[in-house]
Length: 309
Ligand code: RIB
Ligand code: CA
Image 1: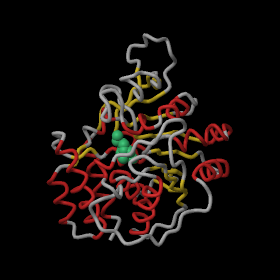
Image 2 (image 1 turned 90 degrees about the vertical axis):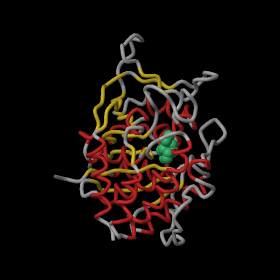
Image 3 (image 1 turned 180 degrees about the vertical axis):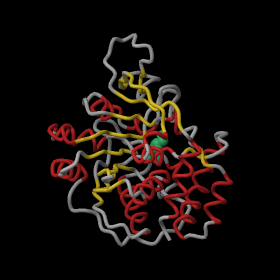
């Protein structure tokens, strides 16, 4: 079975870092490039974090910096979740991998245009880079298999009662992506809040006695602090679930529904408005993930950790 060519667009971020590792570990995926966007932290920090994580596992992949801020709005970051560095917790060596001289948008456009197989994009941060690429080079839509993104929520948000962080940071970019006509799988909070990793899973990672698994455990030790404060029994592995959904789509149950992005509401901006009953008459445009096989997903995480030393 041929490998699935993917580009991961991320804002590391603890869960982004684990998503990168799951993608690199999978024999099903061919990671053609990693592009970075501001979100969880400033672009300088998310880029450095991506380079550090990829260097930690000796990955040789193009890493390109993208947007330092959303298309229209000022940047919102999340130090309360990811810390000042954006990857607080483990002490990682300085990166050996250097950033590409090309921008993220140039890389997305070039890699998609030149691919002999349709590319799957896996955005796990705000959609600024992806939106910009689609605006500058609409022709690439024909060579994009699917955009499987971590973002949104059919029901409640996390950064506001209405909105999930990635969509909220750049709702205009999300509108461009969701209305692009490209097939989309929305891996939102409805499933990521059920894809929890618990203390016993973190202990299991440490007991693997592997360098990378221990680093992931240290990421999760830090990441779990924020979620414990909000009453979560475990840490939601948002971004790794988007990667898992490309590796094994059956890990999610989805419904093909109309989804639009609220960009104007005083209390609702950033909401992914999902029309479950077709009352708007809009054409379905998104495969919305509603259920997750958590046990299979967690097993995939541990399988990925076996890949590394
Ligand atoms: O709302 C969760 C999402 O926002 C995740 O992608 C996390 O990394 C942050 O980017
Ligand atoms: Ca992210």
